[in-house]
Image (cartoon, rainbow, N blue to C red; front, top):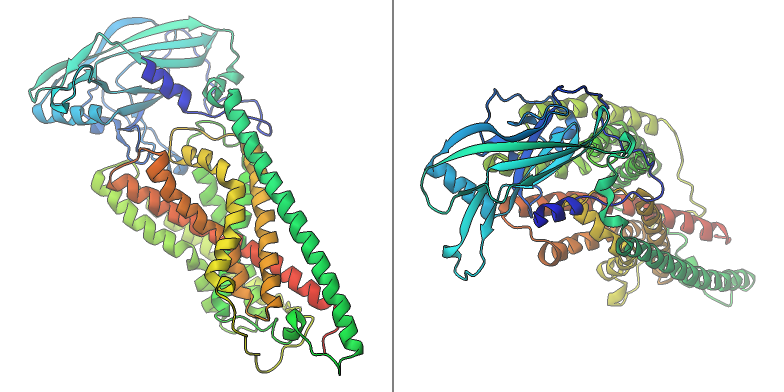
Amino acid sequence: MDRIRAFLVAVAIVTLCGVPQVRSTASDHRYKAGDEVPLYANKVGPYHNPSETYRYFDFPFCSSAPVKEKKEALGEVLNGDRLVSAPYKLEFLTEKEAEIACKRKLTRDEVVKFRKAVSKDYYFQMYYDDLPIWGFLGKVEKEGKTDPADYKYYLFKHLVFEIHHNKDRVIEVTVRSDPNALVDLTEDEPVDVDFMYTVKWKETNTPFEKRMDKYSLSSSLPHHLEIHWFSIINSCVTVLLLTGFLATILMRVLKNDFIKYAHDEESADDQEESGWKYIHGDVFRYPKHKSLFAAALGSGTQLFTLTSFIFILALVGVFYPYNRGALFTALVVIYALTSGIAGYTAASFYCQLEGTNWVRNLLLTGSLFCGPLFVTFCFLNTVAIAYKATAALPFGTIVVIFLIWALVTSPLLVLGGIAGKNSKAEFQAPCRTTKYPREIPPLPWYRKTIPQMAMAGFLPFSAIYIELYYIFASVWGHRIYTIYSILFIVFIILLIVTAFITVALTYFQLAAEDHEWWWRSFLCGGSTGLFIYAYCLYYYNARSDMSGFMQTSFFFGYMACICYGFFLMLGAIGFRASLLFVRHIYRSIKCE
């Protein structure tokens, strides 16, 4: 089965530097001959729609014993895993030949259901001793036929398990379908099916610690490594050129400005102020909608902290391949624990801006990101329930998440807000703000907000563009991304480019005597998130084979939330960098 082999090769990416070489799974069991090794059936779904998966026994498979569900962690449920006992019994070192697992008479409706699944390239996933295995449900015979009405549809009824062991441990397992054991599903007629399986055992010298290495074969190829390193080199060149170019220009321009303003102070009667010094009485005027601004800054800071912790866990090897649900569990727990950072940052900055209604500011901070995420989740979970897909969260899981929000996230947010309100920090402005704001002179179209955001987002996006494909292929495909060291470097580059381009655009805005830079710097910093969402449109149409309302809504719905999170995080980075820069240049001159 070439397709099965291709599928197995396509499901993982090599572990490069930065991740430990130990790739054992959660199971570290030792077995004796005849011991029953746990085999769980997980889910079934169309190969090209990763979000559209269903429970194994939602399809008319049969089992000779009562089906038992495996208790799952929060992350596994969020990941869409629904493990149940499989109909096949694979005892340790016990070989079987064409053993009948169960018999079933498929009704006409069940034949139609299987045929639709086969026509859409449905696959199944199982776990044997925590090792993942995949296979296709059937095949479509199209050779020599141009009319789809003439296609033949077959269901695989005989699975062959090949298991490698090293003394008392399971090392590797693969499954293939017997091409000669087929059930014809072409006609809408009831049919009898004997689900059979064969088990073969082989000894291997591969140590238990390296049994997950085979899932890293695909990107160990030179072609994949070259692409990743090309991505890094491309990003580094972008950073060096940008930072060098901006540093040179800003240093020269600012030096000339400082010399000019020093000269102006000596001959103030002869010359008028112009440029960014001219608006020194307005540049630190607090922004409009300061409560919203402080809430966005707090949420962005929390998301940046969350991302940093996730990278730390990834670099120490927590998210090894097929550690089911570890990433989702970490996201939920760390987001809950870092909510205090959002509350502290927002309340502290809001009070520095002389805000008074800090309680409303905290409510806005807590709902700024969670609100849109909650609305999106409600809609998509309803869609998943309508499709009866495993992406639909059980009521118990929703209660658990609500309790985490109510008992951990909200109290920490309030405690952080109280600490921020009582920090009594003052906004450090080198210049006094005048009573009445100066009028902003008419600006050309390319200095307006939208064109500036387009300029600010393009360069950071170009630095991460190549690596984005691999991220999308992992999140919305069957690849497993484990090269976290490279991803971390790309993330650092993204932060540097965002900070530099935002600072440069802030300087040019001030030089044009436009003092409303607060929101502009945040919007320009976060505009990369809009470019990433635009890439989603390209990826969906040109790089993927996803289809159907459920998969489309999941893709664009959850990517909208992710890109919105990037917008808040990078916006906070852009504003912080601009604030440091503005304080520095106005502290370097004498402002009357």
